[in-house]
Image (tube, rainbow, N blue to C red):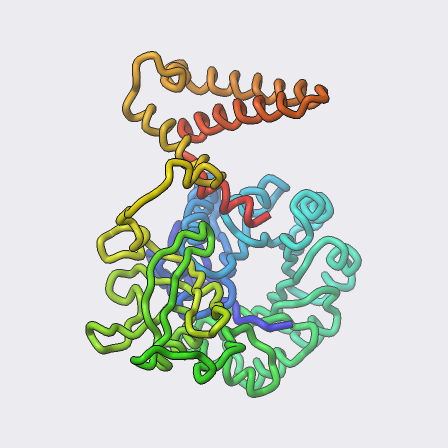
Length: 426
């Protein structure tokens, strides 16, 4: 398995502090700090919520949600777990995994319940000493995917680990870090050692790889020399949103841009007009983070699938392709996502610009209770229709349900993008 370097963020009163024991504020803007960890190529980020009361905890969850929405690496949520509902809130905030702290008995007690509810791949267990392993080995092995060790007896922790273990390190020597990372059961390290060296994390990964430690990295299976270049010695790159498949832009790479894209994970091009290297987003902040690079059959064009931050076009348009030349009337009729977006756009417009006689406006005027009543009725109609051998009836009832669901989404300010992102995490 590839091993990982995991950054840590300690959240207290909506600010980032030094660690568990030291409440010194290191950033009043934890979202920006999290983005820095992501942009420096930490493999994951673990956020420890150290808030003290329910109100502060809810505020911390809002910060965690904003972090998850703004960074490109997986987030692990830890802290303030007392019952299954707390695990749900962490995962619904956007965290890929949630942590059960085994120094708290109630966290041990809910392990099986949350694992069966959300899947063991979502559950991480944190322990402070080896007795937690010896006492709960079977429970950890059956119902969690990973452990985080927060103690100091590294050797004992590794030897007793029932599942892959991440060691939360203080500021140890590099040799000690390499010794720990070489252990088969260790899947990575987090803590002060990673945070302190985050600006050199790419170099650190290369050093670890040179010591025989497999690290996650963008590695090309096609060298630059294998591409067929144009007359300028470049290769055109078509850029596509990895979530929606929307074509965003087209640009060119030379060898330097290709290699920098691979080494940084940010799309980098050669600007022919300025005759210089161009990291997309350095000026605007609208970076493109690489998800995949694919060559066409002749190896003379690259398709890049990216996570686009903000608009891709200098005009402010999300895509550079917006000047319509021609389009058949039914061009988008078979695109389910486009249909959903179009219908939802009409519903949202009705909310802002009411139309006399509109059933949608009738629902908005009557309020949330009426919308929920209709949604419940349509859900029941689906169940009844499902007992009918004619599938067409189910189709019609599902369409009615989806319409009323979109009215509810508009009423509560929820977008299709948020729904799709949540589904993608399941």
